[in-house]
Image 1 (cartoon, one colour):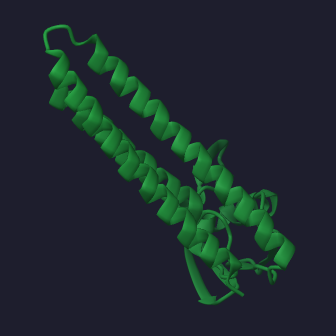
Image 2 (cartoon, rainbow, N blue to C red; image 1 turned 30 degrees about the vertical axis):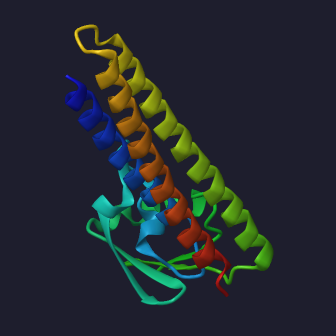
Length: 183
């Protein structure tokens, strides 16, 4: 019983940390990274479809990304979705075959804005972890057929697991901030 609750909490916390790292990857640094475009949804025949499912993404240069659609009829929609994407500020060009995205040089002010955005995402991830911890603690408290000592031990394990995951988010946040502030 206790081990099931702890295992489920740990699994969900691992997923929350991975989700936070993916979120950090979508924040632009000085380089064109295909991860920036992972969460862009393109209106493809009336349904929102992730860009990665509609095209291949290559970055031949540091600030340039080439998007080659699998279906050439989606070219205009892909271009429109990239232009509408928040926090990119990219120059988008379409030659009828590919979409060429050029990211402008980042200013110091823009870098600081992105650091602030990443910190907000990190704080939201930590809130998610605390919510998962609270839910697991409630489930542990609801167990009636288990002794108090076992529950206390399990809660200490839960706290240690939570702290380890919060530290993982903090470490990913530090790396992303350093990457953003690197000129």
